[in-house]
Length: 110
Image (cartoon, rainbow, N blue to C red; front, side):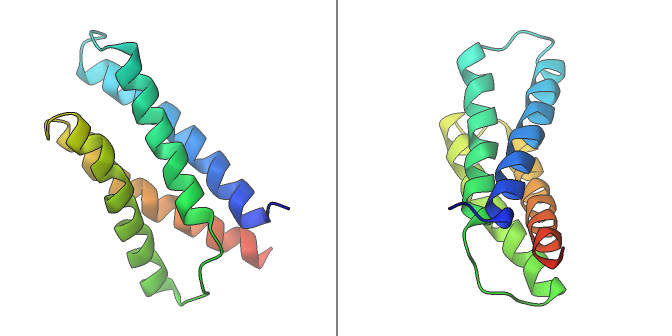
């Protein structure tokens, strides 16, 4: 059975992945391969999966650091696959990790 935390994290990852696709399209002048767009979206979905796992409850400052670290680790996979060229998506992954972790935390409180 999926927990509320997992559901919220996966949904947030999927939605933020769409924002990443839009950003990548704009940055590339709409000249980007579709497999890269899918890979970017899938990376954000995986980020939601990793963050949605049943991690121990911790306080807010540590929680945000955990989100940033997990976002960094997951985003590194896409960043390295681009030949270390898509710095914006890599850094956005850190921010998105924090957002997903915060939303997951909030879902546990409700």
